[in-house]
Image (cartoon, rainbow, N blue to C red; front, side, top):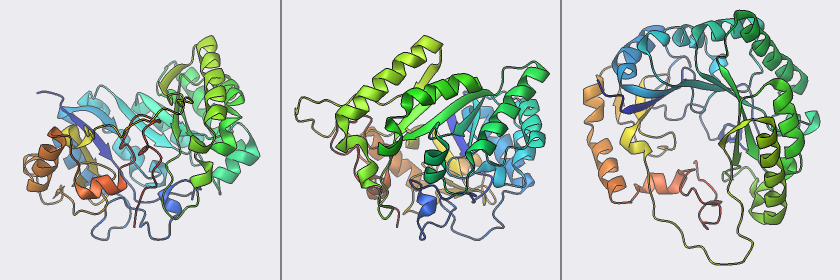
Length: 337
């Protein structure tokens, strides 16, 4: 069977933080990326098992969370422990690590995911806690060290530790120290992305489009330090063009609708996490995978993507409308409501 799907599953609709750059900080954002009916917030285990049995034999990639905090879910660890038999080539999940207790970390390591992505936006406690209100820097660092110690004790390199940083004005000058922290924690990879300025969050002045030379300087210094320490780069912003040359908006391209399924805790399916203003294309509670993949809305979105076009809902909210920081559309505000 071909592994032709990328699968993203949220096993909860909740997050315990309200980070200053995240849509969860918006009152109108429901918390569940695409909920159209009420649930108790967590995916029931029977539903995960049905979804896993139908999607994971075809999955080349599995992310167990695409917009929420998975360790908030009462069923997350049970779900994670059911993944390994399917042999998915790449299994990952992101977390803010505030809830990564030793007991949970041991279950995570024994479940054998390939990567754990820890959201850590600064090496400075005050800056980190200002970006992620409700999180305590010392606790997060202790939890990450605890995970690494369990891996050493059990003699396994997995899950690989990847650190994710949302880049903005208040942390860009800390990047070199951030790489030092990553080395100290034993991080294997770094993933750095520019902040997406959601409408209503007042983050526009944090965008480094206003501080291009400063961003280029610190990103290059940090990149060199990664190379020096042997820390791999999962994602890294391209430098800004400081010449003043015009950069036309690039042609639209979307791979997500072609090969991805995003599934919320109620079992509802969309082809992209940013499919916020359209109904789900299917529901695993009442449908099977073949029915969902033949949904008219999905076929329409794929036909548009093949022509380099996006549905109106995608053009309004997509956070990856361009991969080029010099494209005028890259830093446009994103509309959630």
